[in-house]
Length: 264
Image (tube, rainbow, N blue to C red; front, side, top):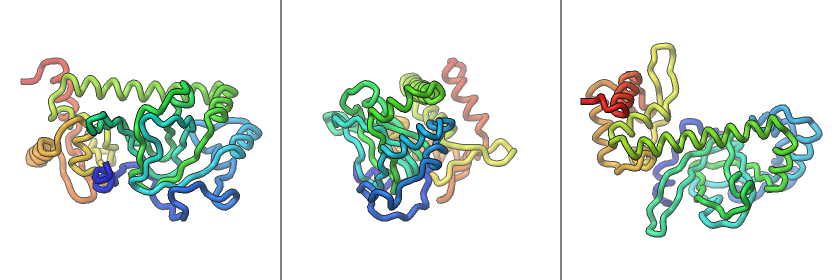
């Protein structure tokens, strides 16, 4: 896992740029603590009354973690919820045989650890920092009290969980019925964002091939071959700085055709 993290320090949306000390430790009280106004800007807590935000700010703590540092591990009994203020982390499930199954990457503005807070059960996955990251650590009781006092916050949390279920359902269908080629197409579309008005999409910086392979349940070699073939067909353009998806509509059409049994 350490080698995967070291080689795969990548994120299309990681909020890199802070340079605070004390990685791996809670920030000293009053030194780097975010104000209530900054907490209020987080999507989950937006619109909460000032008094509730102030109460929340007084009960959380802030923590820096280094790349490769595990924040949570499978079976941990902790119940804190983590809000990513800066950086990115990877969520994995590790089998007893040592195999790792990619679940998701978590970026600035997103949260993790809420399932243990809600259910009170041991942690179900490992979460390790990809980049140097700053986390807001929210005790489970504080998190639940805050959410249950606000219908708007509760609805936002439900939408977050619903989106995760939908994404995992999509991945399960892809893994079950699509070959590596089409799973790669789907992942390229999922990772990319629009560039300009010409229909092209871009992934920047580009993830290493072995990271893409882990995301789609494949080996690095076939992923590298398929990416080379896409470049040869002028479907994508690759460089050290980006993967540009030149014809995303063609990739999407190929996925739909495969799912509906219309491919040749």
